[in-house]
Length: 242
Image (cartoon, helix red, strand yellow):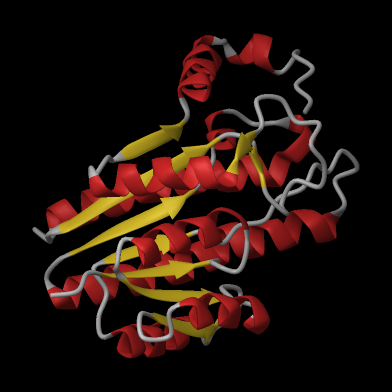
């Protein structure tokens, strides 16, 4: 029986690279995102294997469109949410902060809830999301981004606990990359910048190994370990920039 994965946010960056890996592995792949042309380019690579659906996680009809994609694929074993936005916003422009929350909180809840309910009815499944190491501490340069990623980390903990309370056979993987060279980052000045195809390989490996939390890669695991040791009164005095 063919394995089936649905990837939300597959039009570029990490999501697209993960989709390419699953296509190469022979999985049935459902790809979704806002840009129809990019989705069609993926579908055209393997039209018998790939299904596509235009979908915006910030819109109320996103769960219905997810269901339509699942039906096109013929089911869903793994769900990966790769949609996310974030900007440095030293001026705290409200439109940037609110748009970040709309995608990373409202859209995140909308899509993870839809996937959770699908797996609940199916009786099994694997729910994976791409969050960020930015959720470890509040970053003054990107307040909404770091706060929304912290929200995602805790929300995944809560869903995991809920599934156990309800005795559901649902696995969860919270994938936390550092800086990755994708359209989300507008330049290459970020430290320890990783390449999306390499990160995608680690992500697929983490999902296949059913890791609960995966920090990508070892350099960022060390960084996060040190971050967690820093007392709050020291952290707020640090000049943390890209």
